[in-house]
Amino acid sequence: MSRKPKTFVTTEEYLAFERAAEYKNEYFDGEIVVMTGASRRHNLINVNVLSEFWGQLKKAPCEVYPSKMRVRIPAANLYTYPDYGRTLKSSYYRTLESLKEYLLISQDEYKVEQCVRQPDGRWLLTDIVSLEGRVELASVPCALELREIHHKVNLT
Image (cartoon, rainbow, N blue to C red; front, side, top):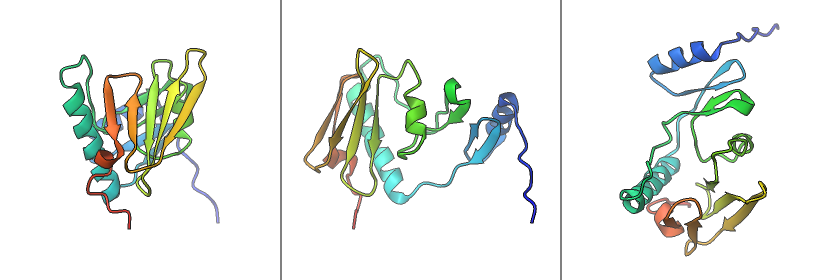
């Protein structure tokens, strides 16, 4: 059985396609990749985090966006949508000089991984692994309680 050859797509073609699409797609090094739908837990966590950020940052000079805002990562020739996946994407995010901090939030356990860029360029990883835990963000005046992040998220 022969494989269908991959078709190379330019970034301009991808962006035109994506603007007209009814579903989200990512672009990785010349290929369009369809994104799968999110789980109930994922969506609840997303809403909970956005609500917490919005409530704490609405008077700050910050803007809060859901994961439907596309991010360009030039070093990987990637256009992607932020999500909670602990994938190769997290290493690509770290190539963005403007990125100072990011969180990886588990939907399967009460756990948040906080990654903070240090002055020397290294990344410091801190695990918060208790429902009573709290994440103090270094880059913005905001703190997230794991209890609030996982509000109404049933892990059983």
